[in-house]
Length: 339
Image (cartoon, rainbow, N blue to C red; front, side):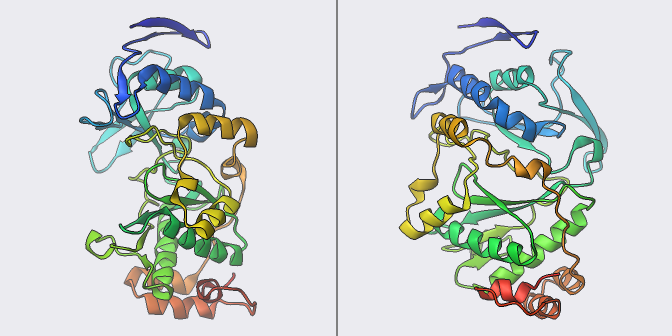
């Protein structure tokens, strides 16, 4: 079934609307488009002005997929793009900017189920506006263990005077965002994130790993600091995920994280598309502060040097040297210190 529609004055032809893209639930393309239309007021501000990598599943989430960075040749002339030089590919890539509802609907019609924006705005691609920690559980660990690690991270950030915001990955884990919106670069955010991941690993060796190797992750939470990179993207808040069911990367509040940990119930942090729309209508955009909140990345002289050498114990000592006397719960927070 095809349909011609007009969205904000833009004409689109939608195709194969009845095609099921989530076979386990019967969730079809029309429902995907409907979800993105309903969540657009919350989602578009988080995509606007950012180079967008799309993960497309033309035959459904159980079939072959592909990543798409360059804008396709057949795009409508009203779809905005941003030319960004890729040193790795030695060419300019024309990324799509999903700045409006019509573009979002057009992407959904292409079965771009997952949306992965840059951490920086396209106009200043080398300056991330946020720092992200992707908490990835190694089975049999699950999102419950990620909640504990997330709360440890929050405590460290609070010690630095930083606010942080959690969201589900929509898959297995939890992601913690620290909005910056102040001058910085990826060298600073990536080094700082790596240092904190090492510090957590040092303090909680039974629960946390900072090593990229998958062989050491069993039963632990991998604190993925490497996402803080110009060449990587993290799934957008409110993006659908290509899982068995139409789950969504959903913003949550810290009380919900604490509740899931207390009850040891991973299902408390699993949200599908209709639930996410209802949550937004009731709670608003819990991730809105990530767009505007201005925070300075702490300048940890000792930690940055130590992180480059990948010596967790040295990171601990360097961080202690920065500490102001202040009693905090949790060894990681005490050792990290406050600028």
